[in-house]
Amino acid sequence: MSVKKARWDWGSGIEFVGMGDELRNGRLRRVVVAATLHAAEHAVDVIQICQAVDGDESSLRTAIMARFGFDEVQAGAVVSMQVRRFTPHATEQLRAELADMDELIHKLAGSR
Image 1 (cartoon, one colour):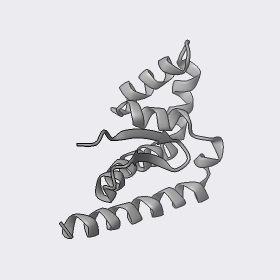
Image 2 (cartoon, helix red, strand yellow):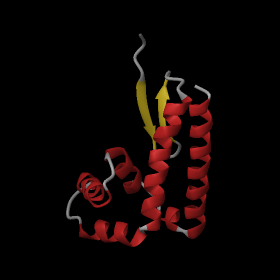
Image 3 (cartoon, one colour):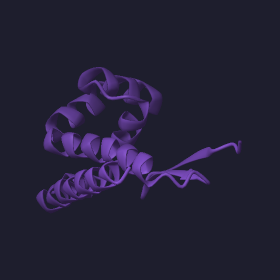
């Protein structure tokens, strides 16, 4: 049995080195895309949380987890979002990516 190592790349998502499990990676990426889309659709709430948190990035992540019910990876993705991700065009791109991920997951899950 080989050891699998997870590596997080905020630009392209979760990648499991040596895992070769496209379905698992797709599901994990979908969770992150859904969280960033939700944050983009609730930008005012995200900004209010950022303004209210008195602390470091960890405190901000914890506040986002509490407000949106996200896990640590999802909250980390939201904290790392760039302002340009809140534009209508970027939000539409996230919606399209989410739809693509749903289609891929459905296809991969059906092939098992």
